[in-house]
Amino acid sequence: MDDVLVPARLQFAITAISHYLFVALTLGLVTYLVVMQTRWAVTGKEAHRRQTRFWGQLYVINYALGIGTGIVMEFQFGLTWSGLTHFVGNVFGAPLAIETLVAFFAESTLLGLWIFGWHRMGRTLHTVLLWLVALTAYASVFFVLTANGFLNHPVGYEMKDGTARLTSFTELLTNPNALAAESHILAGSLVTGSFFIVAVSAWHLRRRTGHEEFFWSSMKLALPLTPVFILLTASLGGWQIGYSVKETPTKYGTRSDRAQAMVDTFTDKFGPGNYFPPGFSQTAEFVMIIPALFMMLIAVIGVLFMIKRNLIRRKVLLWLLSAALVLPYISNIAGWVFREVGRQPWVVYGVLKTEDALTPGLGAGTVLTSLIVFGTLVVVLLVVDWTLLLRFARRGPDGSHLGREPGAAVPASRGEQDPAHAPDVDTETAEPTSAPSF
Image 1: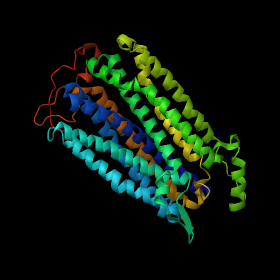
Image 2: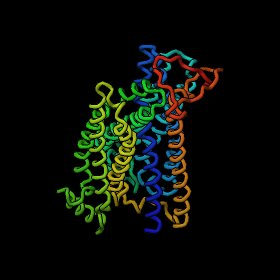
Image 3: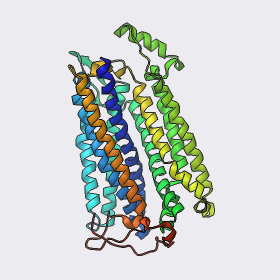
C-alpha cells in the first residue's frame, strides 16, 4: 500500500502547494489593483493609471500560469483519489462544482473584459469590472475552502448506502472550520501581495532605475499596510486554531487534552492504529510562525525609515525588503502543510482514511509516472511564472504592455538600462507613452 499511497500523496502535495503559491499572490495583487484603479477612476490622475497598468500586468501573468496548476490538481481527484469522490463526492463535489462553473469562469470572463477593455470603455465601467474580478476571486476561495473545510470538519451530511449524502447546504457553507481558514488565507494573501509590491519597489529604488517617484508611490501604498495585514493574519490564525483544537485535536499531538479521547473514539470505531499525524506537521506550525515574526520586524523598520524618505537612502534596508519576499511564501507553504498533513491519517477527518480514498487497482508504476509528469509540469509553470514576473518587473512601468493605446510604438524600457546611466526623472508627471494594445 505504501508504494502507492506515499507517491500519490506526494504528487497531490506538490500540486496543491504550487497552486496555492499562485493563489496567494493573485489574491494579494488584485486587492491592491482595486485600490489603484479606483483612485484613478476617482481622480483621473495618470500616475494611478500607470500603477494599475504595471502591477496589473504582473497580476495577469501570475493568474494565467496559475490556471495550469489548478487544472492539474482537479485531474488528480478523478485519476488518483476516486475513492474520495465516490464516498463523499455528493457533498465535497458541490462547492467545487460551483467554484469551477461560477466563480472561476465568471472571474476569467470578467478579467478578459478588463484586459481588453482598456481604451474601449469608460473609466467607471472598467473599474467596476476589476471590482467584480476581485469579488469573484474571493468567491472562488470561499467555495474551495468550503470543500476543504468539509475534509477537516465534515458537517451537513448523512451516511446512506455507504456514501455521504448532503443534507444541509447551509450548514456546509457556514462550516466554522472553512470560514476561519478562508479569513486566515485571505489575510495571508494580502501579506504576500504587500511584500511583492514592496520587494519590486525596493529593487527599483535601490538600483535607481529612473522610476523613483513611481515606485516610491507604490511603496507608500503597500509598506504601511504590511504590519497591519501581518497582525490581522496572526489574529485570524488564532481564531482558526480555536476551532481546530476542538474539531481536529489530534493535529496538535499530545499538546491537546482532547487528542487522546479522540484517538480512543477512532480506535473503537475503526480499530487500532496510529491516529496522530507525522511529526513534521507540528514542525511546520513553528516554521509558519517564525517567518511572520521576521516579516513584522522588517516591515516595522521599513515604515519607520519612510519618514522624510530616509528609506530611499538606506540601500541595505532596501535590499532586505527585496529579499524578504521569500518569507511570506515560506510561511504560506508551512501553514498549508500544517493544515493538510495535520489531518492525517484521514482524508475526511474521522470518516474516511487517506488510504481508502485511493483509486482501486492503482499501480505503483502508474502513480510514479503521474508524479513525474505532473511534478515536472507544475515546476515548469512556477519557473516560467517567476521568470516572466522578474523580467517584466525589472522593465518598470514603461515596459508594461497592458493598457497601451492601439497603434503606438513600443518605447525602450529604462528599467533594463544600466542603473548607473538611468535618468533620475519624476515619472509621475511624465507624459505616458503609448504602444500596441495588450
